[in-house]
Image (spheres, rainbow, N blue to C red):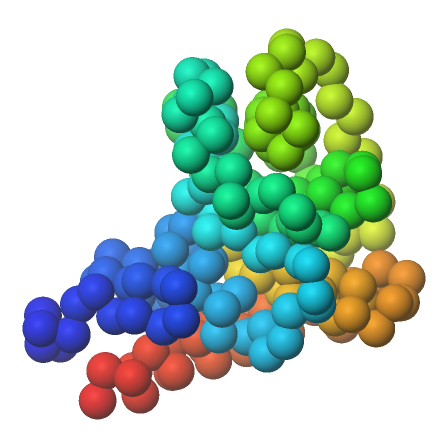
Length: 208
């Protein structure tokens, strides 16, 4: 592919070759590929809902200086809800993606893995997110409740967590917009495989 195409930009997402390669079958998605997936597939985001770049969630995990944390305040304040893919990179060998939702003053975790360790990352992101929203540094040291949603379809392999996260975010925005109960029955292994293929094909067309 012609390197002059890079970074490939779509809405607020930017893709490099490594991000495009991560959409290959049996590959683990990068944060940029996940953000592109949400930007591409979600046709309409409900008013007041923000779908974050996953790199912001990763920033919240590792940044401890409150002044620096406040640099992402505009992404969080004044929203009715915030949705983001999150990673278990609090563990240096983090390899799993899930979804964190802040809605109606409560945090929820959506995890397609059966034995993952996303809860601690979700709680760390949640407390820092709330501290930024309320402009209260003391909240960083307080325990924040993150409810793990039990009705999430489980992936059948070790590499599709990022694609499941895209599908979950897409479905959450639909349910919130239509004021439906959250359900993810449409997210099957075949559905996830088709999302990966659709995103890969859409990028190939953009690069032509």
